[in-house]
Length: 122
Image (cartoon, rainbow, N blue to C red; front, side, top):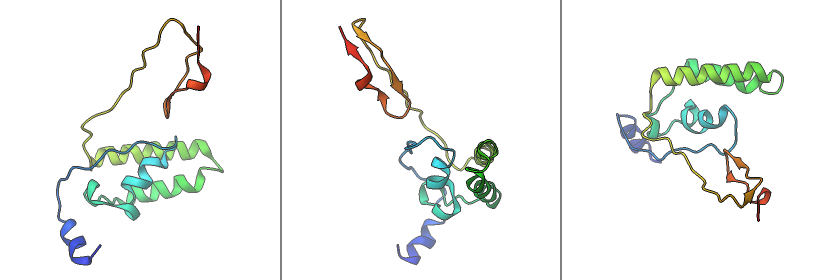
């Protein structure tokens, strides 16, 4: 992107951006793609908070050696971002699956929905 356009975009105060859907269950999923200073985009108004950045960097460093600490740090990151309110959620999609009484062993994953390979039908 050309530097003149980037300077102009940094003055944007509000915009509409597409939603983000977690593609794997980790605290870093939303942060890295949407809220990190390294990936700041127009959709979050060029949001960059150094305090949040430090907490996220520590969470990344400790995710293998101390998963409980990393989880606690991602909670802190979430709270800091929520307090800053750089985005406003306009919706939270939920899904519903209707099944017949003939269906057995119904299982669902929060990531992919109904696990068709696990079901059977009488």
